[in-house]
Structures are given as C-alpha cells and as structure tokens.
Length: 310
Image (tube, rainbow, N blue to C red):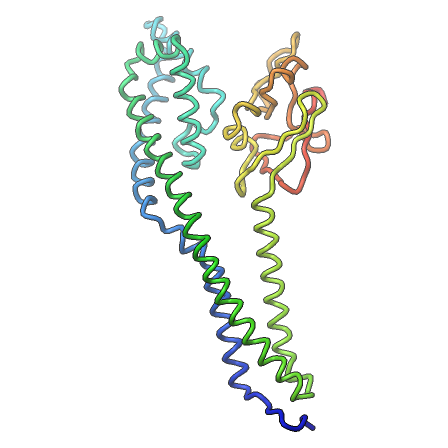
C-alpha cells in the first residue's frame, strides 16, 4: 500500500530523468575530444610535413659524406656531426612530432654552442638548410604551446559548464528515484535503475583515477644525487622523459666509469648530474633492473638510480 498523500511518479518521468543524465554525462566525457580540434593543428601538420624531408636530407648528406674517403675534410665534418646526433634518438622524421621537435631543438642548440660543430655544418653546405629546419621547428613549437594553453582554458571552462549540467541532471534523477523508493515497495522496479547508477559510479571513479594518474609524477631515488620527480605525459617512454629533462637525465650508450669498455647496447637512461658521473655513472632502474629507453614510464612505480653493474 502506498503512503497517503503521496503520488507514485510516472515511469515516463523516471525514464526521462535517466535519459537526460546520460546525455549530460556523455557531453562531459566528450569535452576533451571537442577541445582538441584547435585551429593550430592544421598548420602544425603542414610544418611537420615540410620539415621531415629537410631533416631526412640533412641526415642523408651527413651519412653519405661520412663515407667519402676522397673528401677527407668533409668526411671528418660528417663524422663529427654523426657523433653529435647520437644523444637524440628522436632526431628522426618517423618519430612522434613532439619528440622530434624537442630533439631538433636540442641538437640545434648543441651545434650553436659549439664552434667546431657550426664549422662542420658549414663545411657540408648545410647552414641554410639547417637554419630553415630550425625555423620551422620553432614555429611548430610555438603553435604547440599556444594550442596547449588554449585547450587548457577551453577545457576548464567547458568542464565547469558540463559538470554543472551533469550535477543538475543527477539531482533531478535522485529526487525522482527517492520519490519512487518511498511510494513503491516493489524492489524489482528499481533493479534496472540500480544497475545503471552503479555503472555511473564506476564511470566517474575510473575518470577520477585517470585524472589523478595523469597529474602524478614519477619519483627516482638515489643516495648519490638525491630524489627527483618528473612529470611525464601519458604513454611517454624513458627516452622521451630524458629529452624533456636533459639537465637531469640523459640517454647514455655506454658506461662512463673509468676502465670499462664502451658497450653500445643496451642504451640506458642515466643521471646527467655531475655527482652521478663522478660515481661512475648511475642508470634508472626498477627494483634493481635497469630500464630500457623504450620502456613506458609507470607513475605507479618508484624508480632508483643504480650503478651499471647492478
């Protein structure tokens, strides 16, 4: 029997509240996808397609001249430039464009800071080509930063609005649900609604966990150089993280400890700090196992810096 003076809400009203909440929740989930369609994206893609052939040309010329024994001066210049490219594995047209952008900028900066490398570029006649490559890369970098800042502002405003609408739809649904719970004692009538609401709870729990993980930092501990925290983007490898923090991390092809023979493989992510080098080199490891540059950074784990021998 229903309590006196209370009216059982119509099933259509409950269905309408559920449908409205689903729509608002979907809109909130799609905010990030909508914000990615920025006006800078097209120009970034154009610049990337323009610079990739230039980078390939530069690398092809350097490799070709490094094998030209009949031109000893150019051969020496090319070998010097080849060596200077080794710390930048993403100096590759096939690399992801953000990683490629960082690699080009770092390589170009290294050249600018070295009279010897600058002279080698001139010897191979690559000064103008490299300048154009750097110019396009700089424009790309500026557009990427602009797009990121713009999307951040857009996403924040859109999320605030979408969340308010979702909360309002949720409140309406709760009111109708509570009214139905009071006026109808048939538990079977609630079963579908309960299942749906549990799905929403799981959805928002997963969303919150993903956002917390995205904002977390990875910790690397060391008794030699102390503890450091790094902010990786989702899916970043250790090589990409090293490219972002070149003053603290580096891609090292061989042990730097005295008396050890260079071992080109496997490459390691090492501490670039002076104290780490004085200690004979320290590599990033997880539970004593040295990570590979291609390993994805796991923000749920705590890493250490260990000697190469471990």
